[in-house]
Length: 111
Length: 114
Image (cartoon, rainbow over all chains, first blue to last red):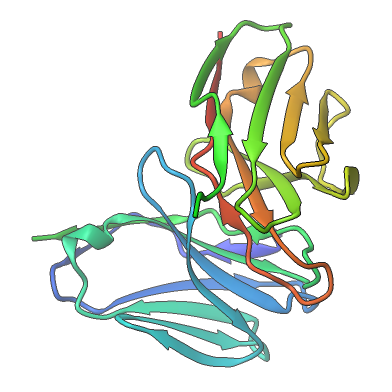
């Protein structure tokens, strides 16, 4: 079993839809949770960075962490064609430890 | 404020050759981590450098080695290249060793092995 599992894709939605992206993990030592967005032929770009359980909102993006269920989510409201990219969940144990990533999911937002 | 920069952008090598990839961290960052991203997969951790020493290492063979310089820039060296080494190699930088800071990535070096 992989330490981090991410919902398989690809995912295609119409413009304006609400998108829900999810990851589960098995290692209870993970403390920090991240979502990265990766456009084709580019490096991962940090979208959200959270610690502990709860919600964090930034514009159209909301990150949710449930440590009791070992489950994290990213919600995108009013999705735009520019949101079309691969989304990677990642997590670490803190103190600059290595990041462990999910496989990534490719999102396509249709105009 | 320059972000993480990596060079070269693309490289084509043949099996058995050696390659060196370079990374300059984001201004103010002192820690550099290297990741390998195969096509359709998430990045896999190779190793991390801080104060010119390897601090952590992932599950990669000794053919993968690195170095960090006094100005915090870093190199990744891969010897005896295999076809399976074809991937996007990503460098990430961060700062602080006590309170966790997010890692910021460069755009990577795409390595193709023929």
